[in-house]
Image 1 (tube, rainbow, N blue to C red):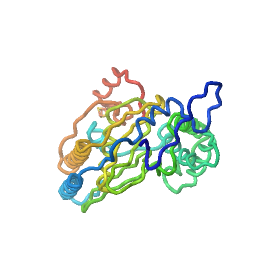
Image 2: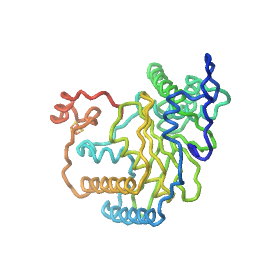
Image 3: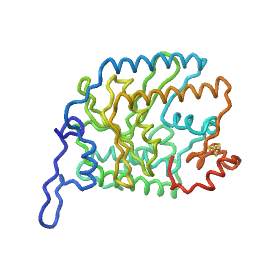
Image 4: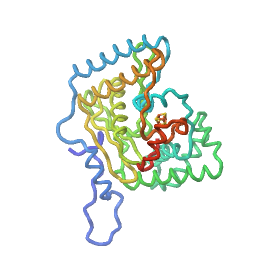
Length: 331
Ligand code: SF4
């Protein structure tokens, strides 16, 4: 059996000996390579019910205890929250001054465009679906809509260019997704046990149709920069949220690097889920120590120094950046 979700993907047309008008079903080598990593094969994956229930009970008990220590504060835990609190604690304690820029907004515009492309009548042109995505986003009554509606001409052009680049790479290099596999772009998942803590995730792409207790879901994050171990942590957190929410773990986690048309793939295991949950609970505990219990934050230099508001006054951060020859990575 070779399936990406519930239904078999179209199989590639055998190579033609002559030139070359590839049919609509012919896959490129890059698509073939990724498809091979996404396929389900072998026996259905089913996690022991006792393990899943134990994980959920452990998470529920720990969240209740941590809620008590928060003293009434509501805490939304996301992948970026965990990345910050496990990174530089001094930066974590700064007010969140995030605002969209063309570089950071290109992801959600491209995702909207891909969502349109998956349902497009006929063959979608990347620039066409990006323009439609921008128009629809500008009408949204939220922060993303306000950002897109208020763009200057130059920022609009930059955002469009970046989104077209991502959308083109996805449509050209990622294997086609049959709608029967129920692909969802920007798939939000939340878990809120009794108490004041909520875990929330928003995966770039989730593929797969549930079937009882069988683990079928693929969780995919798209990245435009370089590989980082943080990407695996992000996906493990998504897997934990999905497991707590549905009581069925996903089966595989994929970080897809658009510029390289390559993937990092990790099968979900009991160890993956346990370490993802431990990291989430440790992150919440660190936040409580810092914000409620008065522990002094610890500086940790790293890639995040590049967009830290304190970098001009932070000796360690400046020294790190001065000697840092790592390639540019978007947050
Ligand atoms: S510049 Fe780096 S080390 Fe300094 S506070 Fe910011 S993130 Fe931390």
